[in-house]
Image (cartoon, rainbow, N blue to C red; front, top):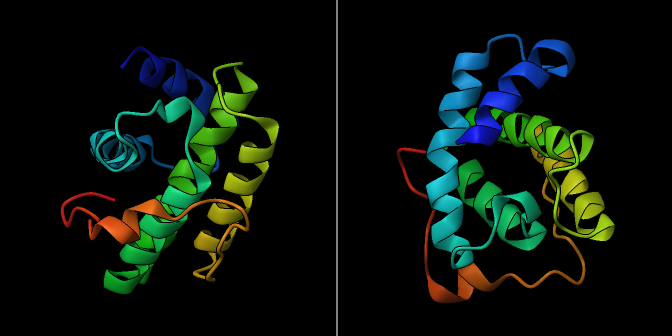
Length: 130
């Protein structure tokens, strides 16, 4: 949760979304979901394939929510990179950027070369959180 405090400070100067409260609500709801779908992987190195699957599931339920979720995560991934907290590869950051950019626009995007493991396990996005 310490990174959320730093994110609030970063958001004041660099954030794109006007209201921090819904942004924080999305992030705090998403972090446990990501831990579940990723097998406990660090959110500081998000898997673009898993995020793409999650966005597709959200988009099937609610395109506006999916777009907002992508905007929130887009902002958060830039925070991670700008503050040296991103622990993934440059390539995964680039691909995640593309996934979220297309998700904001409600466009389908499947990152080439990134496994889509969750669909095979039959898990679905949590209805209460993005």
